[in-house]
Length: 377
Image (cartoon, rainbow, N blue to C red; front, top):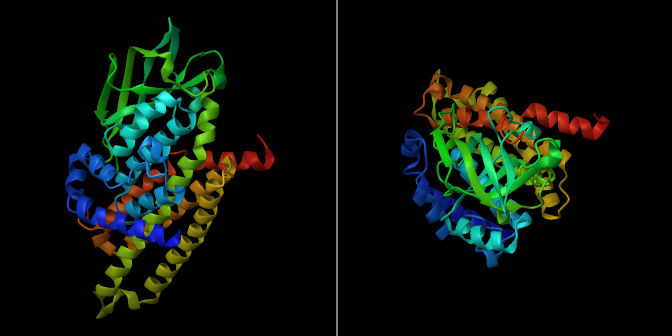
């Protein structure tokens, strides 16, 4: 499989060089990717690649999907990696693993083709990392449900055609009252809010969503009624592993940009790379990356075997994103004043990396998850 994986990696890099690199700066200014990009990625087999062929995917091993994220992040397009992760590695697996045959047939082929973009509706104005605190309700109404509430910080929010939506079907039952839906954004009563302005990831559309007496069929319940919180926990390992893969790829890309710079930039009549401090900083960054790459490879193998548990997923997410922050900061420092100029790509690596310690569960929440696995509550 190694040779096939390398061939696929080469295909991903060629696509990004041809279809993303020439336009990325403009998309960053626009604050959103064009929908056509998803269609092109679908045509080239770069979306939902490990979804079975019967549902429109390639049916490739899980590692192939991770290669897409790794290379997108390495080349400095973390906003795109964020959007793709939500679409291909969070929303699609939820539907694949929990959906009825009708739900799979309705959404997955169009998601693999880039015709229907997926999002996850979890975070709310008053509930971020604490998913038990969500207020959006889906109350029984005849043979269906009526949804009311709002969501925020929703990646792919402007383009999403389907949202894996977390709701409370029984507000008095705590975690056991949480239910997921495959929510079609064409329904009456649904409105998208503004495209939120962020510190980084500028081209990743991140939105508010509003639900005003939206009627949905009971056929759109995803998984078990009242089983939503458990379903969220079951799917978190892949989400956090995907973030870890992007963190390693992103740090690697930052290091590559920095090596190119310090070997050509001169100070005091010699290349910056000739100074001991520069060399030692590069050595630290490379070691940091490779240690975490080894952990990612271990967790990739565990996930492929169905053995990646919640504590290990928290460990890999915590450790890699903290490493990513260290490396991008060290790399920017080696650029000196030019590193702080937006015309130099290293500034975007540094700026974009900051969110990785927040979404998908903050570093503080990851520490709590790990600690509970060791000593309980």
